Length: 155
Image 1: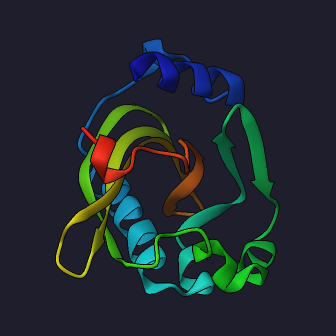
Image 2: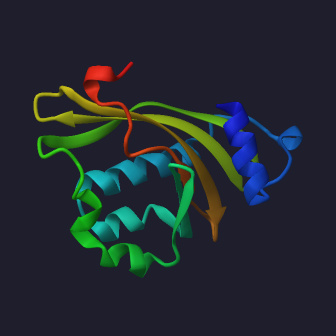
């Protein structure tokens, strides 16, 4: 996981891991909470408010880029089209700052999708690049897979 953080940082030109200052900065972790709160709201505007733009997603070996907040909001309810119909909410199982370089942090997270009874439907491990721009911490990039483990194969 640390290697993946280093590689993503190198690709994005985010600095040397030798200068990293690890810390449990509450503002960085709050940016991840805002991201899940936006996702759980099923409101594209609230979801987009937790992100910096352009916003990058590395998935299945390809980058997808949202250039503007408006472009992401325009998708509307389509963001939730492939989520299990019984999905109620998503929660963090784990989130941990791996490294911090100035106004950039690499955070490893594992989220869990739950149904109304609290049963796990799906889990995913994701690496987040969280930036502070204009005084606001928000997610700039993430790497994971929508084809993450279903609960039957989850660890």
